[in-house]
Every structure is written in structure tokens, then in C-alpha cells.
Image 1 (tube, rainbow, N blue to C red):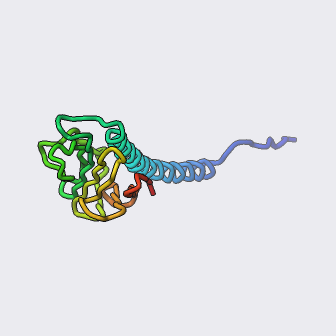
Image 2: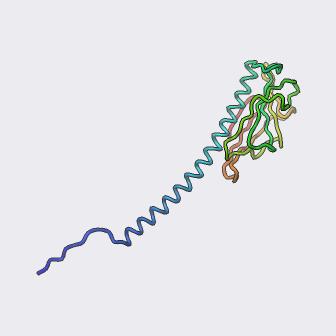
Image 3: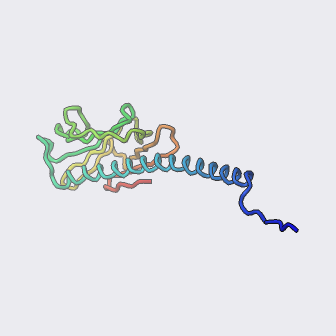
Length: 170
């Protein structure tokens, strides 16, 4: 009399189902990982911009002098050059940026652009010591918002600053 042996193991169908499920999960994970990378790049650029605005505030508060600017410092945003913003020393004391006053051109990361400037399409924020008094676009505007975004517009961060010196990332 022959004794039937119980066979153990997986069938080919079971193995194919497991491999297919793992493939689907891997695809979802890779797609999500790519979008997280883009979001973190925009967030990092927003953090750097906020830090640069605070640095300009510090220049004005500490009376940092560049040529004859008497400690006036500003940041200039322009949608026409949406891949950078400019830190400038207001040498002629007119609360506006001139190309001869540029202190530093800050380039945004590769896939980050300035999407919107409010008020726009170009805006300046100037810090006038010793208070420092803050002017936005040389007028009585009390707040300004710069929106950074990836090229597709899926991930964006807004940096808001006001005449009281508050810089906030939304």
C-alpha cells in the first residue's frame, strides 16, 4: 500500500499574485516618493527665502553699511525673473532697487519658481534703520506675499511679510 505524501510549497499562480502585488505597491511608493521630493524642495526654498528676509532685517538693525547706503537694505522680487530674487543695499536712499545696488542675487533651486508676488508683478521690501522702518513697494502697503511653486504648480508655499517685521511661511 502506497502512502500519499502531502506536497508543501507554493503554486506558480500564488507566486505570480504576490509578485504582482509587490510591483503595484512599489510603483505607488516610488510615485509618492517623487512628489515628496518636489514638495520638500519648495519648502526648503521657502525656508531659505524667509531666512534671507530675516538676514536683511538683521543687516538694517545692526547698521551694516555697504558703500553709502546708511544701513538701508532690501529684497527685490520680480515675476520676470522668477528663478531668483535680489538682496540690495539702498545706496541712493530712494527705497527702490537699482542694478548698481545689488548685493546678492539668490537663485532658487532648479525646479522652484516665483509663482506670484502680491503686490506685483514686482515688489520690494526695504528696511530703514534704526527702527527699522519697513516699506513694501515704496508705499503704504502693510503686507506682501511671495508664492513659490514647482513648475507644475502642484506644490506651493507662500511667504508673507509685513511692515512690523513678521515673516511667515504658509
